[in-house]
Image (cartoon, rainbow over all chains, first blue to last red; front, side, top):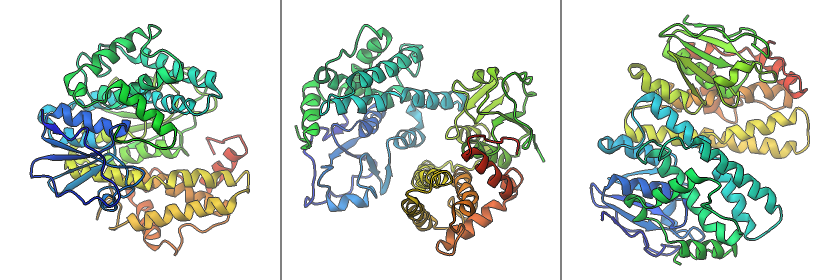
Length: 241
Length: 241
């Protein structure tokens, strides 16, 4: 296991800045329940590089954190005196930096198609945020569940192999999984079934992907996801749940 | 001059599909006034590869065009039996395919920083669309001009060299230029000054960039931009203006 600190308590305003990561090691500034940061976390896990996770309190950010990310958001990746931010940039950066174990395909055409597939699948992102809003406000429930159904129909149709990236999980799977995972967390609370036999290929993919060792070792259990989602909807996110 | 058809009339519903581009040549499905498609157009021009531009009527799309782009949008790039879509994907695809003349830097860290810079600069995109809406509806004018000012302040601060990409124009400049160009088109109509001495570095950059041969040879003159913008605001876009 090369990843430490996945469940470490958040650092917040007033907490001192940790010293720089050792040469050749990676530090991910994260928040355990953030789907965007989870993309980078899964990528680092899959790369198998020595990684320390530092969780950040996103409501009371440490002052020094704005030196890592100009907006104070997560994820941010720090290593060897360099910082790279943004969940859409870090994975490709890691593939460029560590090409011996890359997930975004290197053939120009295949690479472009993977990016386009991720973009098409990203219909699940607004569908998830719509669902999430149902926890506080049940109005327009039918419409929001309808949007989810449309997004899942699209995903079902786009899933042409065992994984979105092909016969092996890769770039597309790693970057989209966190949003499906959160749909799963919200499903019980908001009263719908996910995964469901209505989308059998997606259901099978979701199970297989969540059981991949590189993912299983860094994700949060369902019950913690529930608790966090509820605390967040109440306006008092419990980052250390 | 390796680019043909930049000002060709649009193809629309009922028009036959052109035969496939010759081996080794590129075809860009474009609309002369679309800022997103212009990113790909500038990139192809800068690459210097033989390119045919086919303009598409976006209100009455040819039936066959949906085989090129599943949503019928522009840009789409066709070459050697392959199609790649999306303005955020085509430039990097061209750099990967034709690496001897690349604009997105190949060093992993520099490449990541260029993408992040483009993302930060993209505050000008919603600022432009806000301005554009002023042509039809002058309400909230102060707010929209305020948003533009904030976006241009940000750009002014981010411009640390002669070009956003460094001492030479590159990826960031080519992808963001079309939005500054449209701010320029709208500026007269909506009653504000751009380029302006309030943002001297951006003003100098805008002039230098618009005069680069690879850009100057493919962009539309100001008066055509005006006419198109007005026709579009009237709900009857004149694609062949």
